[in-house]
Length: 172
Image (cartoon, rainbow, N blue to C red):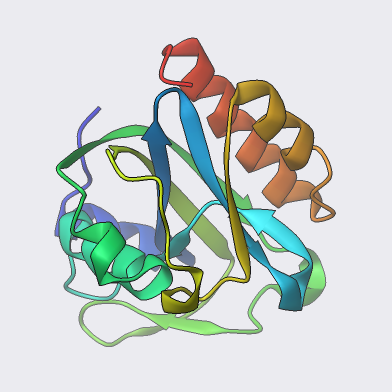
């Protein structure tokens, strides 16, 4: 699977979807989940891809913002393992705007996710350097159990889907 180009990313924005990177951090067939108390939510680290920013730049920027430099310095390589998108429910469509690389404002319809399998040798995370309140390294079964408790229907579907994909690839 090939990473999208800058043009591909801008074409996604033109359809009203904000491109996002999702870090599937893997160590010894376990995946990193993070807890955000504010949203009472366990999730994978993720964030938007900025205009004129490629996936490689976005991965390093977003994951450093979310997990801290010490942890992301341990990233050696990663690969695109899947894509999915989330369309906002009717009342939220157009509630935010995104811009194309040329500055054209587009009403946001949802998010397009690029899932990256990221192997790391480190499992210690300094939680105070992150945007989160807790973390866990989970095997496939544990991750699936936790994901099935996600109260946001589409986020749950997307998270379960990527876990199944990683499991099918024998990465988790």
